[in-house]
View (cartoon, rainbow, N blue to C red):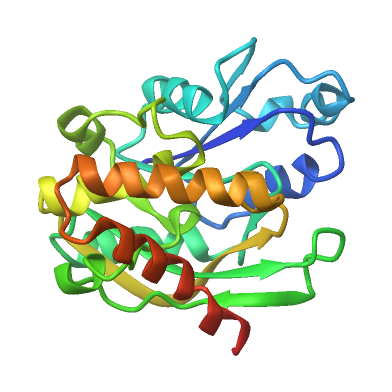
Length: 248
């Protein structure tokens, strides 16, 4: 099975090299790497150019933000399976994609997800939070659960069936997509109890109080859209679930 990995980047010169190396260092041979740049001006393009022979699809143009770039990358990807890797994150181990493909081949699932570690921004070996989501259940989803989005791998055909990331939910577009995927389309998922991604702290939705409040509003709107009961309570529970990630 061919796996397409999509990275969306904008002005990430200091970290994009580590991201690329974690992809091209995988021991699985059938990987297509898609990099979508939103018009970087900080030297990011110079770093990407160093690895241009290992990047299969590269686009650099202005876009409407991260999720617009992500939709472009997914549309250009030709793999059977699609994974998403943020430009400042890394795939945890060289054998990670081989493990992911094994789970797809061994089960009849639509997708897989696994564990994620949040790290210090400058030192990716220093873990500050650990996210072990556990197995999916609809009851957990109704209590604010979600899988770590950067660890999610899906068959590409799911995007044709479920649609792309909406541009109407800000930094919670991944949460709205996951609610759509699990509750509306009944997607079958397999949990891999293994570290798949290391994620640097300081992303779009955790960069201060205002982004946090906006994320809560967008989470609430996502729950309303998909007709979840008690959307305010579920939004609060979703945030409270993060507390235990600090006690790993």
